[in-house]
Amino acid sequence: MVKIAKSQALQTVITTFEVNPGSCQDLLEALTEAYDSFISKQPGFIAAGLHVNDAQTRIANYSQWSRREDFQAMLRSEEMRERNRRFGSLSKSFEPVMYEVAADFG
Image 1 (cartoon, rainbow, N blue to C red):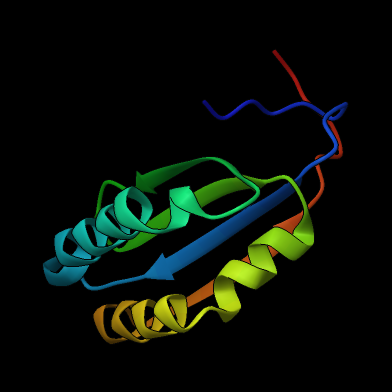
Image 2 (cartoon, rainbow, N blue to C red; image 1 turned 90 degrees about the vertical axis):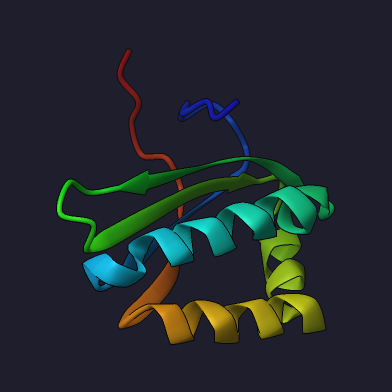
């Protein structure tokens, strides 16, 4: 389960995908399958969530990793490189950005 807390020493990655409404579900299915079969099994993976806006033109992916290096190693794997090419073909653009929690509420 995703827990947002400034006190946690972990790497947060937020990836936003810009999509056409017609390809939103296809990309969502591809991302879900990637998490189910590959990403969630990688060293350092903690949790993730997928979010879709009402217009189905954006997907936001929030993930947590033990260390920055764990996320980077997953990205560099041949399997993930192939999956990212597929994600790119289903979206107009996507960008993973690494963050640290600056404040938490609730």
